[in-house]
Length: 303
Image 1 (tube, rainbow, N blue to C red):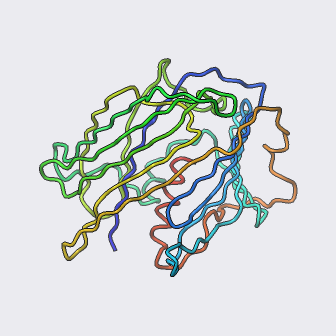
Image 2 (image 1 turned 60 degrees about the vertical axis):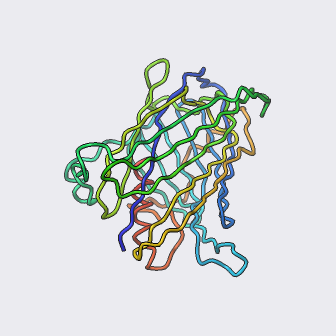
């Protein structure tokens, strides 16, 4: 079965003061329709970062409309600039995997082995989709975790142009943002004043459409304390029928504190076994293996 996934990534960097002496702990809860809820905690201090998370996937829909959730093992990702290494731990299996950090670009041979193409083939030379992005600072302010948060709404519309085979869609991001630097010392730095880039990741058999982006308003580069994303789109089935869909997801920071952190947080515990590969995701039926593989590949891009 052919499928396609599109991600619009805004790579933006603010320039707040960076603190290396005091550690930061942030716990965030993610929720979406059907009752899927996940949580992650990140610890940041100087040249070290630790992320605690647990991947999840939806199963069959229940009679009450909720979705049966399958959770993967408890995971920890540790990044050490001082060692030039990243460690990924499966706490349940007591195993860990290591890789260079910051990650090195794939060689042509590695890309080929992973089935990644060397270039993109577009359906047309000219853009077939216009992405209209509007960012509005409402002017509202409030105190969250002792910091001033600003209320910002970003609306993105995908408008099909001549030659497009896509349907119109609209995404609204409404959030409260603060100035908080969660980078570590070897994270990529952007030019002073901020930088922006757009990346589109497309997977599947359908022809790839070329997009053009029109941005209005000052784009938000802060840290989201509260964020609600509402996406509206249309699905076209093989028989030509259409179905409108609305997807809603929410992000909420439930804990944010600055304090000295235990150095042991950034170490691999004794007794853990080093392995060449590590399981991160819940075990799913065979019919979902392609989707799981795609998610695994996308996760690798940002790991």
